[in-house]
Amino acid sequence: MRWTLFNEIVAMSWDTVRGNKLRSFLTVLGIVIGITSIVGMTSLIRGFDQQFRDLISGLGPDTIFVQKFSGISFASGKSFQDLINRPNITSGDADAIERSAPSIGIVDLSYGGGGPGTQQERIYYRDQHTKPLVIAGATDRWPYAVQLAVESGRFFNATEVQRRASVIVLGQTAANALFPGRDPLGKQVRIGVDAFTIIGVMAKRPTTVFSGADDFVIIPFTTYAKRYGLRPDLANKGQFLSAQISAVPREGVARDQAMQEVENIMRIRHGLRIDQPDDFEVVTQDAILNLWDQISQAAFLALVVLSSIALMVGGIGVMSIMTISVTERTREIGVRKALGARRVEILWQFLLEAMFLTSAGGILGILFGS
Image (tube, rainbow, N blue to C red; front, side, top):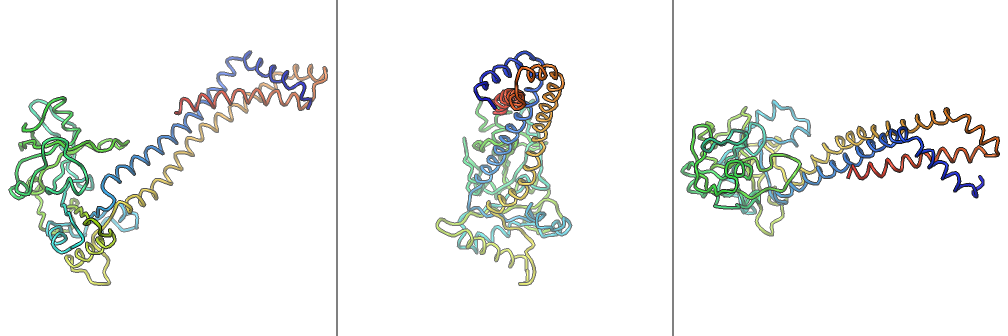
């Protein structure tokens, strides 16, 4: 390679790229599409993963959830029939944990948190209505259990829960849909034919790619049970809808200690022998994130591989066009050789043309992907 001719080779390569605008544009377009898909998909995946972790972290790092079953149950290979035949979580379970677990400071019993059997209905105000929203029932301690503040008004109290009061606390979606720029407190909305008085609006949850983080309304769990014909005090088996208990340890108490107390109380409540497995699920934020890692790693890898196919197609396009370019320019190559050009110098010219095209496509692809 005669490096004194390198500047001339670069200039000739650039002139060739400029002289074949349509061919160069199509080559660059293939690379742009491939790089854009890689950068965009990777960014979406990272954002999706981080926002899900932020959403789970918002539940509280120490909060302990007691459920009939969860996604962790399915991940462990248990059959749906066995899980559905487990006894329901009852209000008596929540009372027992609150009464007998010295490590637990806050206990909430809730229905309809988004799991199996969750009720979804439209909320009506005069001639307006929302899209179908999750109807949740909870105790007066729900905001402390899930660590979500009340933005305006108040949450219902223990007396309203006990009396099955027709009061409701709106999530941000319902409040914005029915009362844009207005104060909803004191207004009456309907769920079906039942009227409820608005006493509060919950704060907005962290923005996530999961649409629906704020698509809920909360009513007392006793009112919820009455409306949907549930018996919170009966552990009926075979039902698809069961309550969930959220327990928050006292300050300074280790979460593992609190979990052990909760598990022991639940096993006694359900009359389980030492050799019998739990017929309930005790999960924490860490367990949910571990399950998410198992699910997401394979799915995210598959998405990246699929998006990489677009980049591979773009690369094949460059190879094809450059191969055709060499074939079309046989006469030019022959003339250059006759004038003394060496094989390596001609090779460098074509390589530089490909570098110009792919570099331009790479830069544009990164910009579009970002």
